[in-house]
Image (tube, rainbow, N blue to C red; front, side, top):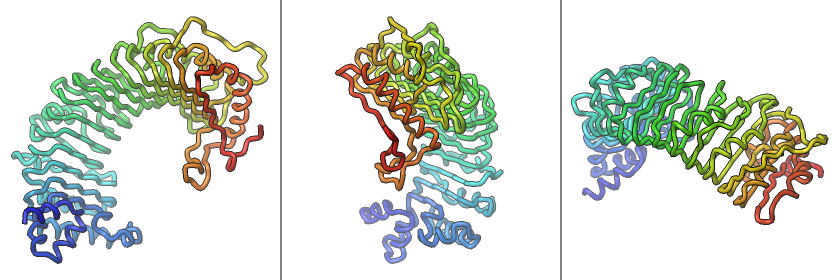
Length: 458
């Protein structure tokens, strides 16, 4: 009997319910089914759901079915409860409260309430009290109000916290974090009430912090001693994180994050090994004190949604960044733009600039996506070929395709046909300035526009 009950527990919600309808044995185990995942996709037939995706009847049927399942469930043995409601605005808060009270019982390990409307639904913190939430390891909330107060110490086993579009202040989050000492991962997305995020040193196990588009955030301060991965997307913030961080990804708007990274991070995170930077702004990078002694992988993404990327920016100034990374092994530079306004090397009679005496002894693999005829980009490429003595592979991708027909897409896609014409110039540049500089020990890969979708004459 225990074997059959275990088999039944491994079935999806819909299959477990069907089995319970034809077997008394499965009907008994159904009352203790451990994994309760409620969404239109898991409850309804796929074809019916697609046909009636926004139907009020579908929503009322969903409410009725969830109620019936939870009423027939004993509440015992629930390990995971996931409520994913597309049109939560059409469902009374009373229903949501009742479902949580019926299913959140001692022993539960995962709780996810994923609402897809911007609601003022108040998550009932009371369901987590009296030891009920002591076993919760994974908590995910979206589009609701969450107000944990001082002394909120019920999530002692919590290892993963994910809040998306949740109304919670920095102080309230601080109350939660200071009492959740088992936390290993914190993910915050579009939580616009947080102005100051403070991670206490008591979070000894916290290894990953991800903060995305919390629009009013001004300060991030982490004292977690073992934080190794930090990812940030958003506007200008004051950042202070522990020196144990090994991997950083920053995607910033309205912020010259490349210059910030070069100036601030060597002192802040001296053990950094991987750095990914995305920015729509850039200024030339001067030679500065401080080095990334352990940085092995550097990715820099320059992206603009319209027009050209910073015409005055000097790609050649990135040499100063490379000079600060004596252990760097891989470099990716990606430039996404709709046109090129940098001065072209074609038709320019002046010599390419050189920066002798700067040897990059560890670089093995370099990839430049969006390689173009900009003179400063060509100068950077030639500099790498002449000074990266351990270089094994250089890839020059002349077009940033989102999709390629060679990968199974119906056709190659590119943001602007201007860049296809720029690719033609880039291929001329490769032949005129790059090929003769490539050592015999270096593998050169040049990615051209698709010969079927975007033929380029030679």
